[in-house]
Image (cartoon, rainbow, N blue to C red; front, side):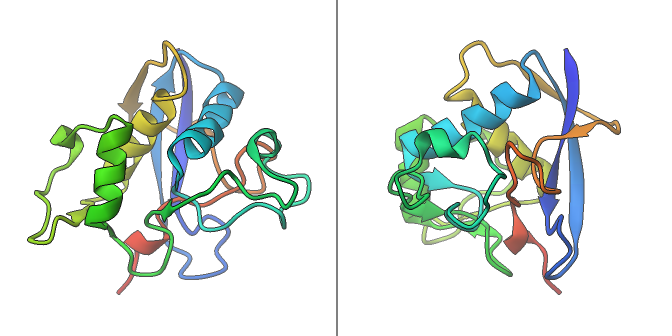
Length: 171
């Protein structure tokens, strides 16, 4: 198995500059994982990144396989955990994720009174992202680890130049 990491938060340090790294092992390549993220976005109308991709030029090469002529990925209806202080998934988005195959057993905290799902930390978001990726990557296996390895997203990567979980960090 190969070792990778997600950067969660503001990897480009052009906002609140807070970030964490969550490391994992997988039986798939970095490019397979990156492409599966875009495919899951396309299939589910859910995204964990903040914008459509027309302004990223040569970055996010896999997103172009799923984009329309304007660089938009399908009809994204749910952008999750992207904005400052956005650390919960709204109830209507949770219903959409459950319809895509999510089970509620991956969350540390119970949903709020209105059904909004708070996320406890960057590791919990990584588990959610890995599940999301796995929905479009047959035979995908992974294990969270404690290590320093190749990053899957951000830092101007040509395959997945997006930030996840910007909204998890605020004072």
